[in-house]
Structure formats: C-alpha cells, structure tokens
Picture (cartoon, rainbow, N blue to C red):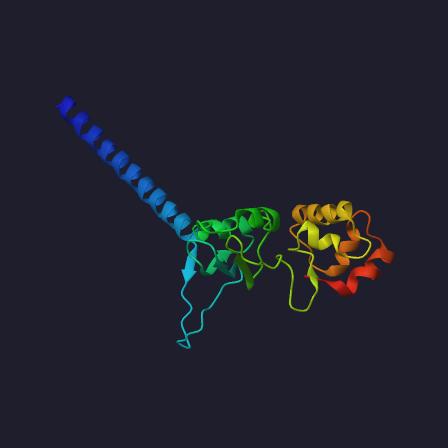
Length: 197
C-alpha cells in the first residue's frame, strides 16, 4: 500500500516536470522564431501597381544595381552597413570591377534611406561613389581621391575625413567637418560650397 502511494506521488511529480519542460521548450521556440523574423532582409520588387509600401522608422530602403548577383531594392534594418547590403544582394557578380569596389566602397559605412549603390563591371567607366550631378562631393561617401580634389585638402586630411566618418557613423551636417583635425574655419569656408551629405 505504502509503495503504491509513493509511486502515484512520483508519477504526478514527473508529469508536472515534463509539463514544465514542455512549456519552456515552446517558449524558446517562439523566441527563436521571433528573432529570425526580426533579422529578415527583404528584396522588394518594384511594380507600377500604385500600392504604397509602408516602411517603419527602424528600416531603410536601399537600391543596389549593376554587377551584383541579385540587384534590386532592399529593405534593411536602420544602422545596416554597406557590407550587409552587398551580402543581401548576393555579393559581387563575376563581371564586377573588384578593384573599383575595393577603392571606392566603404563596407563599414552605415547606409542611409534612399541610397543608390551602383557596382560597375570591369572596364566600365564608373563615377566615383559620392559624385553627384550637382558637382558636389558627398563627404559621407567620397573616396580618398575625390576628397583630395577639394582645395586645401591633401591626402592626409582626406584620410582624416574618412577616419572621422567611420568612427562617428558619418557626418550629420556639413559643419561637422570642422571637427576633423586639420580643418578649421578658414579651410571650411574654402570647401563648404563644394561638399554635401
């Protein structure tokens, strides 16, 4: 009688433990599924359907074209880096000008909403990233050679501009360039009409 009572008690405890472990595993599964959903990168097909794509405040839309495996418009998490956009686009295609990419694409750069990235093919005449039709030099994307063309800015200061933007997630205002070592008010007045964000 006593042994049978202990067995019933033991079985009830076992059932409670099994039920508890089952609930924990279900909770872990839901958490993992939610994390996967949050980190998903989406390729958007642009269709002239008149449908408005609603974007949240913690997402940016990036257009990457040219010599990548999957060109298109991508919805990325705010704060994503250029390297992550390249990965989302499947990486560089076989015909990509890898030397140009190495010199002109900063994979650590934080991408901005509405940004257009174009990867040229080998032998293609390519504009340096940061050149705009307005002729202004984008201090958040320009390469060393382009920054060096600014009056009074040599290779040393050009490198300091690149280092500053990498360490501070880019420039938020053109006046911020005065915080770069070697750029004072006098030099800023020389270049302010030739730079943009």
